[in-house]
Length: 301
Image (tube, rainbow, N blue to C red; front, side, top):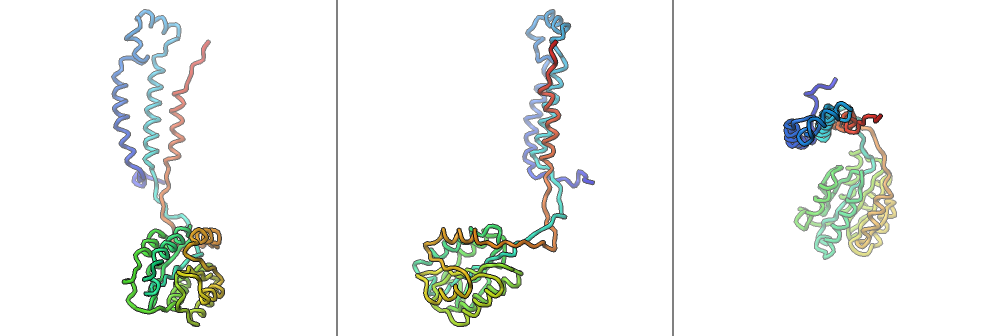
């Protein structure tokens, strides 16, 4: 059973509409007659004659007014959003996750095309849809900037603040960034993900190619956003990883690919999802009952 103590108003500010409604009721209550104050302007004998003929229903105006008031009260309560907290809803998570691996070495960060690289990354993040994503930043070593999350706005903000002062370790070790991306996907139990590396491809060692092979073996794809024209190393890395190469002028292609190539797989979570069940819409059905009084018509004989 649901008690009043279990109900919460999602939009309580709508209750302020009760104030002008109360003022309107007060004005209507001061009206002198139920026939719309016609007694004040029509000759009393004529009103008596009309009433005797059944042409004046003194109580009909009162019923219409009461119906309108009750309907307005129910409408305001419905708009206020009476809701009950539910904890028994089943939660799902998307097993198709994306890890962005950002090369923050000096050769990339000091490039005049660095802002374009960040813009390209934000385009990719904005195209994630329901897929969770994370961010790895590497230079001489690799670090998790953002773990796997569904909050893509936070992910985009984190990407935007990476600059030449972010990395404490000089150098470029892409194999460490790829290894960390693979570990993140493995710990998050991502089954069909993507790893997107943003780099100039200047330092790609055999260990980086081995990591690309390990990523592909887990069912993920490795793609590259190339700072300059794709090098032979970048082409080889993508071929091993089974992904695509994008240049900085291919923002639309990246967005389309992110949207159309998603391999969404949903898994039921072990924990329930907390949400509010809004009953305001059902109150709107009750509004129809007093509203019918506004359209009641007496049969004419």
